[in-house]
Length: 400
Ligand code: ATP
Ligand code: MG
Image (cartoon, rainbow, N blue to C red):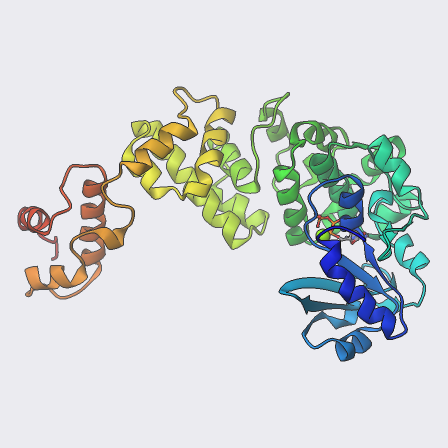
């Protein structure tokens, strides 16, 4: 019997099989299982149609019926269950224009991008490996299923996916695959930027980013990506050997400081950054600006979400700043802060209204609260109602 997480997922395969259809684990989960890596999502491929799958399970979310995918919930886990399919053309560079459902897994594996991603496994743990995926896993090589030239033309995003897997797995690109990417790199421009950003986020998060960065450069994919395609020389500003940056936000912040002519907003817009990535970029840029002006003080660690501390240090490292703080130093400062957030201030908007009853409510309130918050965090004002009231008396709202 297979171990977790396949053990729990086996019930899903069995239910489908009991209803007369084939079902397998496929793609990334099989690859990561064979590599003994942590498995993230268990994806399932089946000969049953989405409608059929919906009928035989109680908890189903129809996320992409037209592409054959439904999510089955089993024991509080979600499984993407996708009907065996062959893809049509990708004219919108997002999804194939049409897909055809089929009843054999062979063709379904054939449409997949890389040999290491094109394996299936049944509930006994037997592997279906029609494209020598295991061999490539052993050789630590990323190679397309079929003719790379055709496969990259069909969906140029696969070129970015190739370097993304290189970064995550520490694999190298097969020499032909690499040459094919080199000859088609410009095609990446036809792909929706959001899709590229998703892959690049994973690329940056990979353990082998420095090696993979070399592949991104030598295939000249890098200088065809948003912003870089107008300013290819930017790439040379990245440290050559090691790439300390680990997310798109860190990269945007880094380049913005090295080359301020390109605004933060331009990076965010051109890359159609996700809200998360946008927020992180802005926070990092604020923190680095503050650091350059005043060094590491309370306000920086107070303002910066703690999940960005490491990223902040990495951006400073990439920028070769002086006196770069350690994570430990930042944690020590944060644990000694007078307040953790604005809610902990001993005064609020209501107190301001009481103190200045004659002044009509307005933006001055936010402004004053901001000032008080800053002073309290910086230990220039004690977080006591009396003390703050006293300060406010001497610093009344400026209203005209
Ligand atoms: P991860 O663990 O990072 O999610 P993954 O291999 O599961 O890696 P996904 O992007 O989730 O990657 O895709 C799931 C599977 O779908 C892949 O393993 C591959 O077989 C197939 N696939 C995904 N995108 C493409 C694509 N653009 N072209 C061909 N096959 C693809
Ligand atoms: Mg996946």
